[in-house]
Amino acid sequence: MIRISYLFLAAALFTFGCSSTNTVTMSVQEPAVVPLPPTMKNVGIINRSLPEGETGVLETLDRVFSVKGPELDKMGAVAGLNGLMEQLQRNERFSIVERPEIEKIGNSTYGVFPAPLAWDKIEEISDEYGLDGLFSLEFYNTDTKIDYTTQRVTIEGPLGIEIPALEHHAVVSTTIKTGWRIYDPVGRNIVDEYLSAETVTTVGRGINPSEAVRALTGRTEMVQSISGDIGRNYARSILPYWTRVRRDYYVRGNDNLKMAKRRAQTGNWDGAAELWLMETENRRAKIAGRAHYNMAIINEINGNLDEALDWARIAYEDYGDKRALRYTRILRNRQVRAAQIDR
Image (cartoon, rainbow, N blue to C red; front, side, top):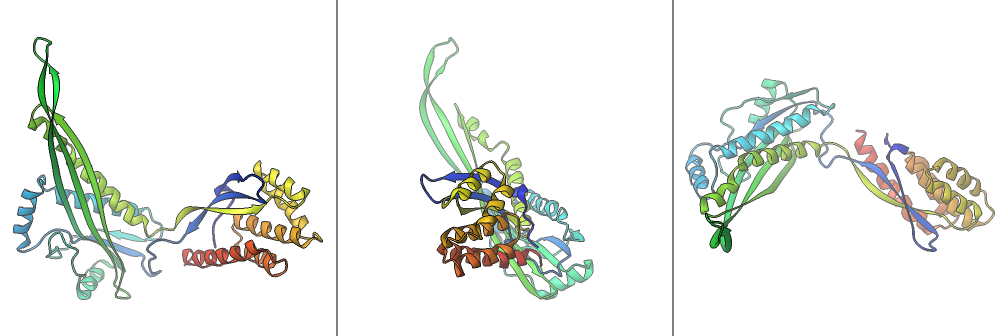
């Protein structure tokens, strides 16, 4: 069932001149960006990002030409995996979160998203550790570039006299590239493939080149921190999330609708709903239709999607409220997404 209550109602109201409606914003829950099969309860995390075989030569050249610190990629990859594991362990859907150390599953195409692991290898790992899902860091690579410039400035000399000098500027940009997969060994299915690129920029300046390049100081720590966030964010992609939506409701037509507007503005939604319910029996079709539509709104606010759809449907079918027709489509879509959350 959808889980929405008054707690998530923003009660943010907007009045647009003499408009017949006001707008309310609320938070609604959406299904995960990456839905996992219900069988996936025991999961493992593997690191496939380390180079293997002859790619060691390519990695050495890459380190030279991209200004990499020692072991930067390895440390960043570990930070990303730690972030992923930390977030997955907080997810109550998983019974077990393992970190098996598997040899000979490195990336044979250094710096490139590799072909998926063979299913025989996936099943071998899963059987050994009792897993029904594998999260894999398929590749990890950092690419660093330095933009170096100088400009003329004045500095204070030894005798307090300002003298002309050159100030050296270094802008260091490090792009962190990661690739992830989620393997489902039970269904022999790749649940998700995801590529990301995040850039960290630092700036240094000084009266000589060595001082300017001190912008590299702390770069390793920054790369590790960002990599940890990348791992945590990927783990969050399998969770339902909250988003803000806007809904219009009627505030004009007769005195009760106007009074209900004032009650809603003060947060008294129950009081507003009492008046709307009363007006559903109004002899004027236009007022009754608006009241039915507003009853659909309050039911969505309370998380009652089925009831909301019933009210909106009657508002259109029996009273011809065109806004209600659009709203029924929104509510049906929400019902479909709510069902995905509850699987």
